[in-house]
Image (cartoon, rainbow, N blue to C red):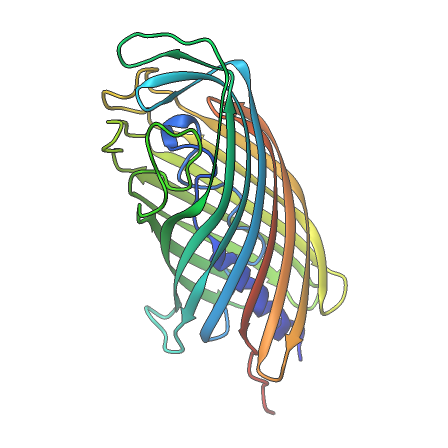
Length: 325
């Protein structure tokens, strides 16, 4: 099997490009878009047919007692949070071209456990104050995340566009510290580019996107539009194993609004960078597996907790057909 055939399946891991809020709704300092979803091989084509992706995600986040976050009409100070989540779902890639590109549709779900602690509730809807810590945890399922991607290939150059969103059916209560749903819908669109040279095994990708959040009806809070960039770079050491680096930058570009936005526009940002490794292997005669492990250290956070997160993704997809002479 050629290097080109082998690397195609790693792109299936990028189909886990879904969004999930691991701690709060958007007004809690956590966005619909989860930075780091896309990375290496994001725009490369996939083998037509059904595929399955499973991703384990761990996040450890913190914000000092001097940092404030609006949530459900009150202001919380400080935050410590841990999330252990599993994202999973099918994808289908069409064999027939759409707009001269390759169309893939996927649906992802999320389940797992959230734990959150705040230092104090400073104010409530009626002006009441409370100086104490509070802890909450939740094991449940989150929202659903449909995604459509369209990809084009021209030699070593690969291009893609995508659209995804949030179907708010997951576990969410506005007065709860830990949630797995975000309590409102959202739409995210963007595009990306991947350079991959099979002869050298070198790869570089970047995906730019924008999120529009609908208002949370339980809190009358509408988060502003955000911009996010995910990137990755990799080098194959042989036909199955690659190493590289990943990173992201998230920036809210318009302010929050609604009667629940009691801290004003509350624009947030965060950046992250870290290593990655990947491994490709056959599964039976007709399937291929791809493992991708990556980790991010966060910095430059504003109006948002920061920390570190870890991803371990597994994708199962059809084997690319062998070319005949």
